Length: 542
Image (cartoon, rainbow, N blue to C red):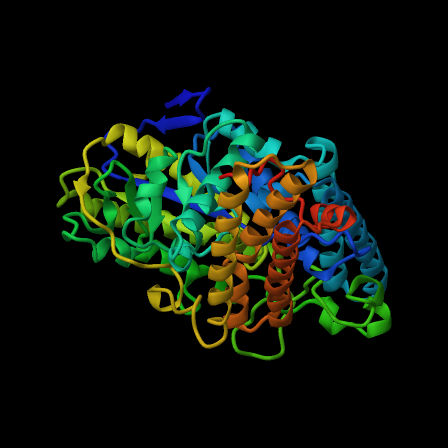
């Protein structure tokens, strides 16, 4: 039996005598990458790959569950940069071009592999997959994936939350309370303006928390957020129920802690499901394996090898000679792993409920891009988990955090500890020898922006000056994104990450100096508005 509140999108699934709950949260975020000044731009493929391999498969799973009348509860966090990119007409048109290119490549692969039966079978599978993506994106939803998520929210199965404006790393922006406040406010405002309702909760970028952050969340009516396990376990006072019950931060804002067991089962490189030898190998892609002349039209500048999304091999363990991927075997393994996940959650709940004064809630948060992009079978695994949890014989009930807070209204008051879900659990991945140089620049620019806004807010401004001030605020926000220091530490597209920060700061400096000296060039301001058109409703006075 399912109880729904269609106007709020909240739900609770009633099972008799269920002793505990599981809440699965997917965090969907990509950095804002949009380059209208080029005919095509490699890093825009990050969005196109995520749409194809993650978001469209997730929507297909949700649609199929709804058609089969499966009762389920899932939470999805949509970041403001992702929201803005998904509804951007330029990127929508470029995505269709990307998808048609993948279809063309799959057609060529069917011809090329005509004497290799196993490979051709996979090439045909990719053609069917790309055709399905095109049909879902273009015909079923008219390029509006946000409408698909809103549909499932209205049906009572999907809770939608959001995060900070550009996924800024809030503890390291906290030299200015205004910087933290604006990241939160503009993130929430963007979500509300685009989707038409307030987010049910808030995802802290990188799950990065510092004591006192909850005061900003309370200001904007956020009821709950998430921290990593040690953020709760090291809380003051010590939590009576560990990470299996939320804590009240002292102002009515509630913190939920990540369950380490369910995280290890999915995330761990050693014991996690995605590393199984029957699953598809992410790094084995024809973009790196075929002769250059065959793959040239589908890689960067026809000479720099990149992923195409067509991959023919399974993981195969440590053997460098990869074996051919078998989709049926992989999907059977995903079903097996879904059973294992549900069984282990049952065991956890049975043990916890015997000692707790309330039903435990197991918080299982993951990056959405894991499901489909890094782990091809992830959407299948997720669908099986949601189906299994809906069955009465399984002693597991899926729930959203909003519904849990409606059922359990009294919580232990405790102050979570500073923490992230990054490497080593604190801030070191975002401030270290590879990226610490950026923070003095960010703090200086933020202080200059605040002073500029104070000095000019009460004056009679020209339309161009107002536009320049709003664009300066956009530049600051974009420079603050946590993605760029993360990339610098991980060592992937380091040059691009550095360039993005320096470009945004240079744009801010131009606008700041032009405003101070009253020497603005309207054509240049217009060009910046075209390149960085995020947050159309931003008001520098905030």
